[in-house]
Image (cartoon, rainbow, N blue to C red):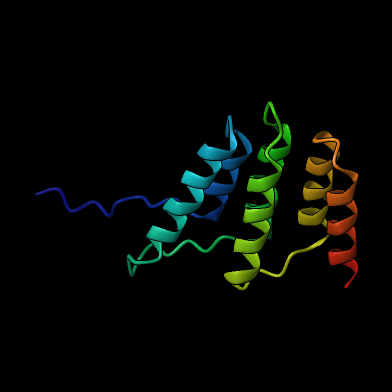
Length: 114
């Protein structure tokens, strides 16, 4: 028999895949996959600030940019206990800027400072 231990993706794997994501829907699928991995005892992969920064950046890069999804990713991070950092907020502010939404950009800035 073949007793090889399966190679499991780690957070670096997921973060790299997120960096290459073509759109916010694909990023959401990757995050869901990470959440599902936590149900397997031996391959729990917890999203980090880098994970969420990459996912939010995908929203800003999208054509058109997806501000709603960027906000959802930020809220998911907070709900999951990932404390947003300056990179996550900067990605969200950039997404708002690309959407020509100065009010959203200012809201992210105030949230970041509070």
